Amino acid sequence: MTSSSCLNPAPSGGKPANADGRTLGCAGEWAWAKRRFFALVIGLAAAGSSSAATIEDDYVPFPGIRHATLPILGDDELLIEEVFQSHLPTTLEKGTLRFSLHPHLGDYTRKDNMRLSTSLRYGLTENCEVSLGSKLFFSHGNGEVRSFEDYGASNLRLGTKYDLGEVLFRGCITAIGVDYEFPVGRPPVELTDGLRHLRPYVTFSHRLESHPDVRIFLGFRLDAVTHTDLQGELGKNAFNSSSTGVTGGLVIDRHAWHYTFEASVDTTRLIGRGKEDVFTFRPGILYEIPNRRHPERRSLWMVGVAVKSEYGPGGTSLGASFKLRYSRDIKNRHLRAPFASKK
Image (cartoon, rainbow, N blue to C red; front, side):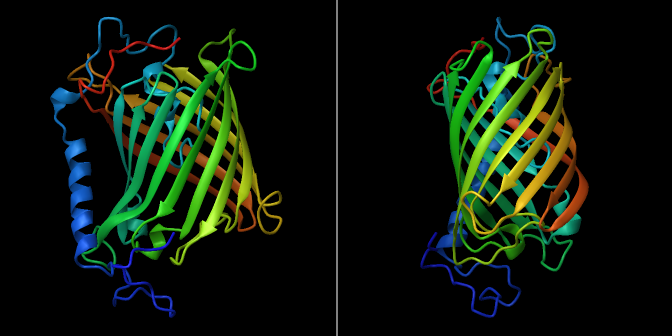
């Protein structure tokens, strides 16, 4: 992605144009745009307690046996980076607009900047949702950069998913989708890989009739990578070229608890450069924190913990993650349809 002309590119020495290597090269237009973007995110998060979704007459917080995540929220409600990262088939209810904010609390001790993963999901039709997301950041002052000396957005992500229903056989739901992620501006090197990612995928999910709180899933994906002129840092086993991957696993829904397991293989052998493979195993737990003061409203907070074991060209790693996410329905009577649970 070609950067805007108002941004100063990093010189060939490997450092951004400024002395500390972290501030943006444009003090006018880009600073104004960042302030507007941050104001939008803060406004969405502080929309007011009165905008929280209230339960309708036909709405049960945890319906049936142990099905916790509501069908009207779609399966992507379970997505939390580094805890559960697999797209599952169902989509957000038509007319529903949902905002999520996920602070990366570990950045306070590991990085100069705190990342805030944000997303907006909208139910376009009964079977299709679209999404917009970005990783915001700000310097927290516990590192080499003073508090709020640097802030902005490091990337932008656009996505869509279409639920095809039971096209293969009864009880197996299929969906196709695509995500497009690219860096924006001149973010700190530690917050971007400097790559554009086009990620189409297909996913299958089947809930066991004998154990309806258990569903198994299988997904296939492609990550088409293109390079930009931005400097970035790759993860320990992250690829620098295009790759393909497959993930299988299961989700067990028990009221407000969700127990997950993912096993995946990613490789550059088919479409990338070289012959590199990465194997990942990730068991995890997600918990929807009940709204004690207003039990008639949906939970606004979800916590997740996962243990990841990974083997790849960068070596073997074993680590744990603890994540916290805030979500809220944005009430808009002109865009929102009445609640109606999908079957």
